[in-house]
Amino acid sequence: MIRRFRKKPVEIEAMQWPNYDDDSYDARCQRAAIHRWVWGNGGKTWVVSRKHEDPDVHVVVETRAGNMRLDTGDWIIRDAAGEFYPCKPDIFEQTYGPIECWTCGRYDAWRDAFESNPIQRLTTRPGGWYSADDREICPECIARLLGRTN
Ligand SMILES: [Zn+2]
Image (cartoon, protein in one colour):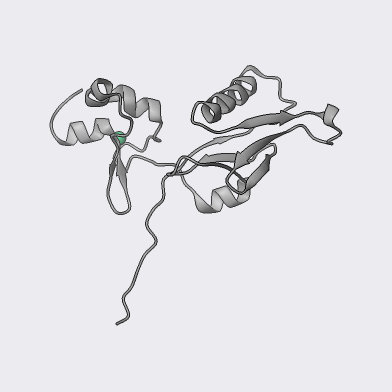
């Protein structure tokens, strides 16, 4: 019997690596945040500088498939299994879109969801977005829909 199937949506976390020559506060914070994020979740990243005879400063990410290169504009992905790996920006854009609230339109941010939901504050468990087949609703909108306020 032939049955029809649809690929299930996959949720990932991702951060974009800024140009290493960008010395702005935001870029420096982003680079530091990426290393903290990876090392804080059992991964490994390190910077390969020009001193090591490489034309570009880049970051190496340790993955299951070996060490991979993270260049300017590349995304670093943490998949559902907690593994880190790099992704080229064009592939990333073709494959992923931000999780957006169907009701209010805002993007999901782990911290947002965490701060807005008192149950998550109590349990210290992230999440709280409601996922339907093809849409997402943020914790505040769920609370509003249920007639409650946080
Ligand atoms: Zn919302």
